[in-house]
Image (cartoon, rainbow, N blue to C red):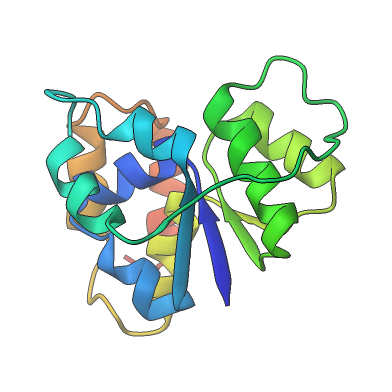
Amino acid sequence: MIVIADSPALVALSICDSLSLLDVLFGEVKVPQAVYDEVCIANKAESQALQAYLAGKICSVTTRIAIEKSNGLGKGELAAISLYKQLSADLLLIDDARAKKVAYLNNLEVMGSLGVLLLAKQKGLVVSIKPLLTRLRCSEIFISDQLLDQLLVMANE
């Protein structure tokens, strides 16, 4: 299974020290150069962990691909969607709400970082997601408390 990942989802999973779950759950993780460049800026949160994790996972977007309703998306999001289409990937890992809508409009399979954590719990790869969600609550990433609480209910925690 090929998964294409976008920046915010990677950063969220890195904060949870859960990047390795991607390899276990999905097998092959790829990112476009634009996403790598966004997350590996020196002195940016999680940049060292992401640089190490993404080594060997960077792909060039070689084809210009039409993406419906893509106005307002950033370079990384556009590159991730294009790489998904170029590689005929199976899943797009993306957290941004606008980018998710564009992905759905373009018939892409989508999952966010919270979905990865929930799936890992369901598959027995993590005992509890509560400590991981606590890390997210304490980070600079904004995820509503209501959504995090819903996820805990879904995980039976």
